[in-house]
Image 1 (spheres, rainbow, N blue to C red):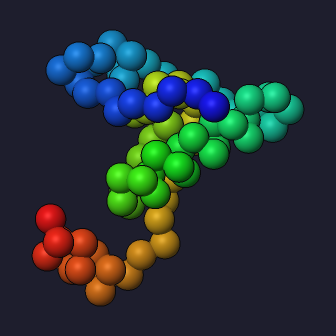
Image 2 (cartoon, helix red, strand yellow; image 1 turned 90 degrees about the vertical axis):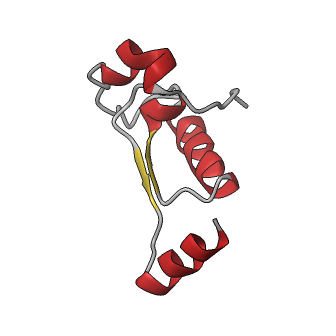
Amino acid sequence: MMKIEALTIADNELFLRQVSKEVDPKDPQLKEHIQALEMYCKQHEVMALASVQIGIPKRLIYLKNTNLEMVRRLQTIS
């Protein structure tokens, strides 16, 4: 499993501003990249994240299925 860490504009602006690569369905690492993105988002209660933000410069995004009640609940916990 790949090492996952969040990147910030302050430390990684050039990397984060690059144009991410298109996803190749035949890429042997695609499944691992998707799993890494999903795992990071679930561990950190993220609702939406681009894979480049965790060091994977591919056009992948994670979007959590939410509703307003879930958002309100998360806002009161934080």
